[in-house]
Length: 301
Image (cartoon, rainbow, N blue to C red; front, side):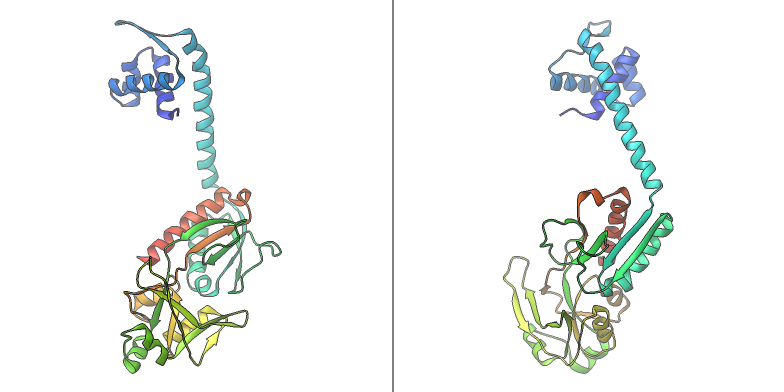
């Protein structure tokens, strides 16, 4: 495979008529410059320079190839410059759907920061725990938890190792005691999430990443189809919630919530940015992906 550095050394050597002069300009050793030219000749199967102890000149083949090498380097530089310019002038409006808890309490603030960096980028946000239909609704990007089952969508990972955690407020723990084992959940008030009228009351846990899940059917006196409401109930000391670690990272850091049974792994809850096709992955989308991924990593720290 041809290397950009080798092409650069070849062109600079041809321009200067000397390997040592090219090496000085590129701030590398003459030995490295010589190795680069030999590597390029080996990849091409051609002699580009005729060498003697006192001179270096291009062969006829080398003369012809020099124009191709210059053009390749020019195109690569133009592509790099266009990418840098595109990042400096990111713009356009993105229609984004996202889950309620993460959206209200984390994403909105992160997007505010992103717009400070790139003021020409606009957002239209849909914040709901109902899964948006990207084929029927005007959505450019969907930010979703869970493994991606629709293989026709392009998934850009934001927090691939995120999992659910059991959390409760310090007040709830003082009143009802710490959990010592999973089966003790059966006597606690569990705050449950509901989607499409179906209550998520089967909570799965793992002794380690390779183990089969252990599932419990939990009960409680409250359920909601809004994950933010479930989190607020937990902060208020009304029960135990089983939440995405990202959703409650600020609450854990501030002491409003504590993780229960931290040695037991919760259900995987990877967070992805989804697009319908690769043509939608513009420089703006890629920059947003990188920014949000960094924010997720910081939240997990």
